[in-house]
Amino acid sequence: MNKVILNSPIEKFTRKMFSSVIERLAVIIGLEDLSFSQVAALHIIDQAKCISIQDISTRLNLSLSATSRLVDDLVKTDFIDRVEDQENRRSKILTLTSYGQNFINKLSIERVKIIESTAKSLPQEISKKFLDAIRSKKEKK
Image (tube, rainbow, N blue to C red; front, side):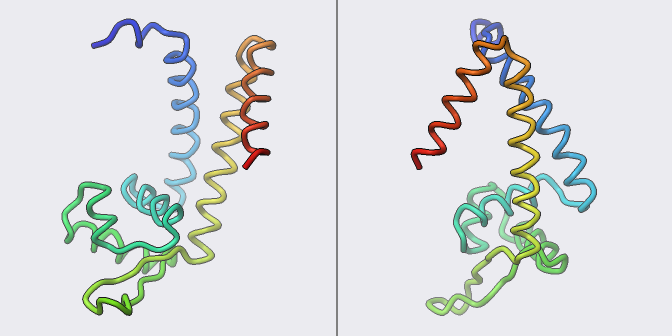
């Protein structure tokens, strides 16, 4: 184990932030009765916009059958749509439904609130620099 990293201020800060984020998101995820892998799949689909079941399987290191069950549940609960790939009829393409996109947006809003709150727990001069740096980066995009 790397004691330098474990004792560093950045590790202490990020551990506090991650703990706060995961605790709050666990509540929201629990209300929807989703697994960690399902939420990860939703995030992957959100970033990719459309993706195959095989790609989700690979990225999450799950068997194809486990991924298919995961996808079936997300389709049944209206988080994602599954359509036949026009180029390969044996493959299915996944996209978020509006319900799925709203759920991801809800998680994002909560995550940003927690990150800002955690950053504000730092000494004021560091907090201001941290938040200013993040905000200026967002505005440049």
